[in-house]
Amino acid sequence: MQHHWFRNLSVVAFAALVLVGCSSTGKKEAQTGPLPGNEQPEVTAPAQSDSEISRVDGEGNPINPQTGMPLSRVFYFDYDKAMLQPDSLAILELHAGFLKNNSDRRVVIDGFTDERGTREYNLALGERRAESVATFLVSQGVRRSQIDVVSYGEERPADAGHSEAAWAKNRRAELVYR
Image (cartoon, rainbow, N blue to C red; front, side):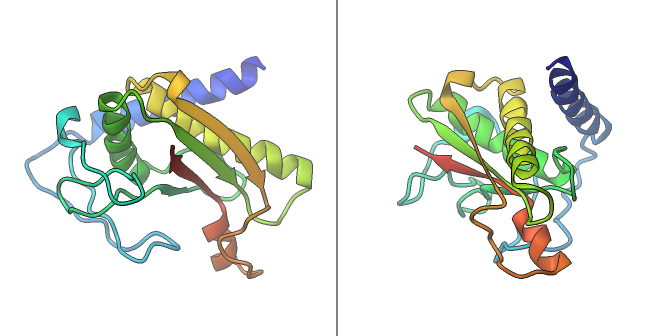
């Protein structure tokens, strides 16, 4: 149990180091390409103030004030890993700001894996992935009581294929607002 706590703490510490190490020089960088399964790439910009994230789309998902598009709610992971990708952190900060400003809103974080591995292993890995997103949100000031975590393991694949490209789309965590 302490091992999982230490791993989660390590994820948060790594995220903090990445954010500190990437201090702004006044230049904005666009993401070089879309993440697997995303139709439109997000532009990662410095985190906005909490008060700017208040609009939602027709389904209740937060709108990125810079792009006017719904925030990406899908975050991808490397094979057999539960560590957040550095390019996910800016978008997750925006989600955290939204949740802090809308304390009546809740989010369910669904964790998924690809088809490789046993059912039990994949359920545990999916939970670790969802928990890493939850831990990051909490580290940004979101109340834990606003967050629920569910693991589907290899169930509900985003891509039913049996290739590395398909598996990459299935190694994910998704935010579902309630």
